[in-house]
Image 1 (spheres, helix red, strand yellow):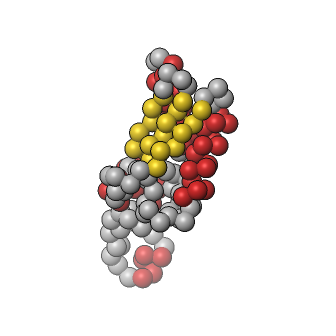
Image 2 (cartoon, one colour):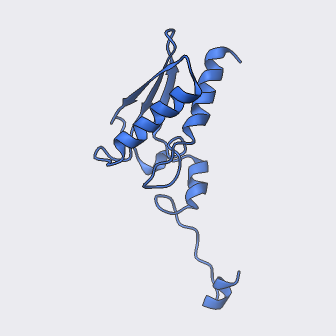
Image 3 (cartoon, one colour):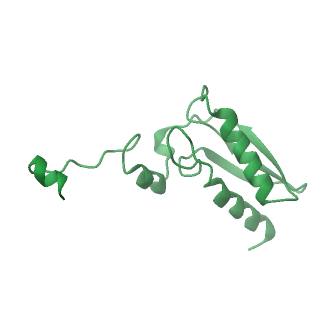
Length: 123
């Protein structure tokens, strides 16, 4: 694995530590990170979106991305490019994200258990 691939892989794993505070899963599995790139000038560019353009946590999320990558990858600068096209949709959530959501919130709900209420409480 070359250095660029290694750095981008590390950056992607680090971004999984950035949790969307409203939904409760990380921005990678939520599908908010569209692209990671590394320039010859050691700048890591994170092209990402948010669930809505008016997201009240915009500055918190993008600031956390910048600070986290900057802290763990010294010697590299970080640029967050917030984009709105393509617009984020729930279908962009990864399988791991769906698992974390347990099929709820945006995904398909788990099928209802059959049986009595007592069976459902104790199984």
